Amino acid sequence: EKSLVWFRRDLRMYDHAALYHALKTSAAVFCVFVFDTDILQPLLNAGLSADRRVEFIHGSVIELDLELRKLGSGLLVRHGAAGEVIPALARQLGVNAVFSNHDYEPQARQRDADVAALLAADGRVWRSYKDQVIFERDEILTMAGQPFSVFTPYKNAWMKRLAAADGSSFLKPYQVEKYAARLTSPSSSPPETIPSLAALGFKKTNLRELEIAPGMSGAAALLEDFMERIGRYGQSRDFPAVKGPSYLSIHLRFGTISIRTLARAAYQTLHQGAAAGGAAVWLSELIWRDFYFMILHHHPHVALAAFKPGYDAIQWESGERARSLFQAWCDGHTGYPLVDAAMLQLNQSGYMHNRLRMVAASFLIKDLGIDWRWGERYFAERLNDFDLAANNGGWQWAASSGCDAQPYFRIFNPLTQSGKVDADGKFIRRYLPQLSALDSKHIHAPWLAPARELERAGIKLGQDYPLPLVQHDEARKATLLRYGVVKKMN
Ligand code: FAD
Image (tube, rainbow, N blue to C red; front, side, top):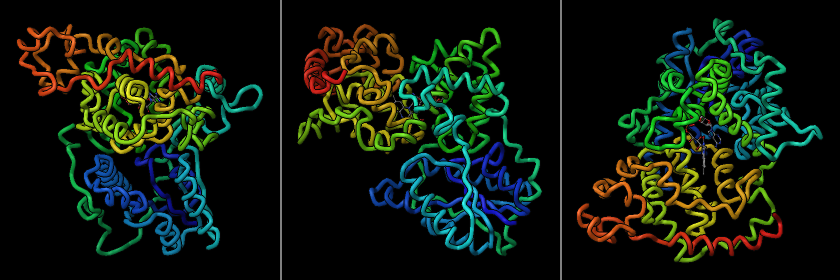
């Protein structure tokens, strides 16, 4: 039997479910990655030819190919519509089966179903495996056999299931190495080459300057660094000026590290004295990730609409006013320094600290009155770690329309948040150097600073830095009214 493994968001050659199963059951295994024009062409059509994610994938594919070559094979790399390329390649190579890992996004599910049908029509088999989460789909259910819609009981059930299996079977790495001799590649001459970024139509970004290293090696280095400070995660994770989180999200997104490696690292640290507390908080974040994949699987409508029926009745700002408020938010021109610094972090690096994602999302929805879907789309375009499940979950949490979201009347005060998470303004100063001379008391709300202080700091409001777009107290009242339509449902 010959097989083909189709790599997508799992760009590594160790602890890889599909690769392991293909190797275990086949005599010869080919590996392929497709730069999918169905995904890339819309970016190019929209003029988005500098995309850090494409560059990250490109770098990761090069590394994956090198690693596979060390094992005597290599990666076939194609550029085209994956839905057509894969069945055609399967035919050309004469494989019996195509192996891949489950994807939970609605469009990807459709694509995979189409590919499976084409393969079947050709007498070939499609096999797909759980790989990117610890527990998926129906693996964690309530006592009544229903999917959970509240996180804490889901997490408790998740932990219980893991503990019942002693952690071993669900966190165990797939031993790809055991069967590596079955990896093969077509004997072509000249040898296969990977198209350059330019040949794909994309430009280089500032990924390198940001020191975001792609590939399995980039992920391993981040994990090593994080494990030294995991014990402090609980205390440090809310302060954007501090190196608190792991920054592994882009690697989880593209599978340059496996979720099992990370969950195992956290799980094994749960009983290690000083580091245990931080590990427990971090493991909980990884469980949120599973939770949102599960929600998307059971409720694919969330990709377009509110999870809680009724929240779509909310009347958001519209017309020119909505467009200009939204643009100011995107550009980091709201006049609220923490929100603006957060948006500049996103625009300049493709990353935004988790606490700031909550603050910026809440501000757009509950201070500016803009439909959460606009913000969700902007994050989807910009985030290096964009993931439909987590991004949608985060936005619907902020909008109060999601499962286990914060209640609609809980409205972040952007100034209180700013004083709490960036007390001395270190993060704000990093992204808004024009405010750097302001004292820490006034940096959170420059418009409240006395004229003398603004003069001393050399700031002309409305010129060097915008006046606030809205007053939070008024915006808050308007939001409570706006959410009045859903009050009855709570
Ligand atoms: P760490 O703090 O080190 O966390 C480790 C990992 O846990 C993350 O890499 C991520 O995979 C997972 N994780 C952490 N928090 C969450 C969460 N709340 N929900 C789901 N998974 C989580 N995360 C994404 O991966 N992609 C997104 O598109 C995304 N969009 C978001 C949008 C909004 C409005 C909000 C509030 C959150 C969003 N998140 C998203 C979740 C979270 O902000 C990021 O996962 C985190 O900031 C990534 O940084 P890190 O790897 O350093 O995180």
